[in-house]
Image 1: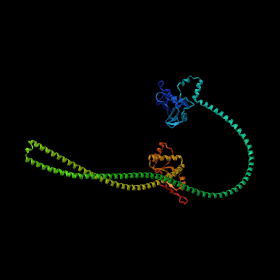
Image 2 (image 1 turned 90 degrees about the vertical axis):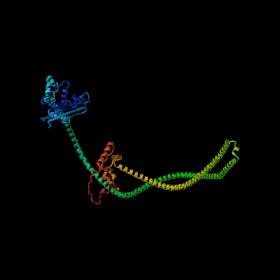
Image 3 (image 1 turned 45 degrees about the horizontal axis):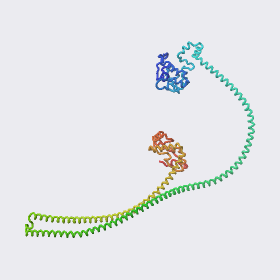
Image 4 (image 1 turned 30 degrees about the horizontal axis):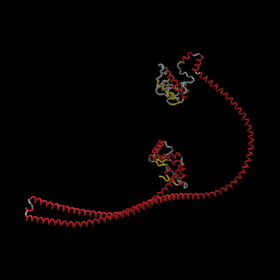
Length: 608
């Protein structure tokens, strides 16, 4: 057997892992500069094989770790690989590896990369010849020189250690100490035997006393038996009388139980009636409140209708006043039309008369001019005018005067015709306005009549709708009352149900409901108890048979259960849950007894 390989990492001056190989089976020499790590190399071998580095304090462990620049080293190990071809180490392998790893708070040994105790490693080394009592298989530096210059007594001591006689001296000392302990134990045993002998004498005396005691005890027990037998007979007689009384009291108790059950049933009936009366009272109170609200509403509607009626009266009065004003205005317009017609009748004859006068004047003028011309013709133009220019001037003046009078007459005629046209137009406009106002008045009267009819129909419909609304309000209040009662009963039943289950189950069910509601997970059917129904008389049998499994959660697949559990663990929700995945459940046909006094409970369950 010889060392085949040494691996050092983090130990003393070896920061990084250093592998030293190969080694010669007989002799090896390590050569190097000062500070290259020769001493630490041998110290590393001694660290694994020697017993000098056991029972180290933390500061001593820290001294073995590498101290230098860079990150701090927290672990160090030394691994030695032995060639075990001669099977000196009792392991059926050609190579045996021993590693020791050390840190601030740990010291571990590994044998072929398996963690073992220090005792196992030391025993293995002992079997291979590395004895702790003879540690000279490693000779340190300067030890030979020390032995050469040592006195004879130390050399003799050293030779004894090398020869192994020190072990026998140690064993002799151990044997002497064991012998002393044995002598002490013998003295204690002698003392204990003496105590036992004294105790035997005492027990003999106590034995005699015990025999005497047993004799008197038998007499005492016989007397007690006689007394107890007499008392027993008396007690039996009393017990028979008491049993008779108990039977009589039992009959009375049965009667009282019957009366009590009848009274309890009557109390339940009265409680139901009381609840019904309370519900009816609350319904009546709600109806009263509704009627009061309706009364206030009708009062407001009445006030509104009175105001609307007043407004309609004001509108009618305004319409009547407007009608009177329109009639007066119509009378005034008719008077104006009449006056205008009378004036027109007066103007038209004057117009015709003036026109006739104009025509007669024009005719007379033409006659006079003709006559004058004839007279001038007779008299001669030369006598009237001194010269021709005067005559022409006079003729022009005459023509100009006649033209101006003719144009004035024409303008006057046009003005009269224009006034007549305007007067006719005004009469036509006034007639149209009168006709239009008369038609508008009739239309408004018809509209008012139709509006009144529609208002009456709308009021009837409004009354019908209000009555329907009242009925719906009453029904709604009744539904709310019944819903509230049902909700209270449901909450009470749920509280009783939750009280029968542990808090962990309740928290788990609440957490699953919250997850399903928030994450909208399909395939969750709730607890088993919510998925079937049965008669009330089978409740106890179902509870005893199913137990806590009534609160197991039914899901479609095991994937859904895993998803819910992952969400619960992620959100750190409290509670205990158990799942029943339908894809994992298997059903076996069961043969039930056919006796008359046996009923399969599953046949009494209603489920999907």
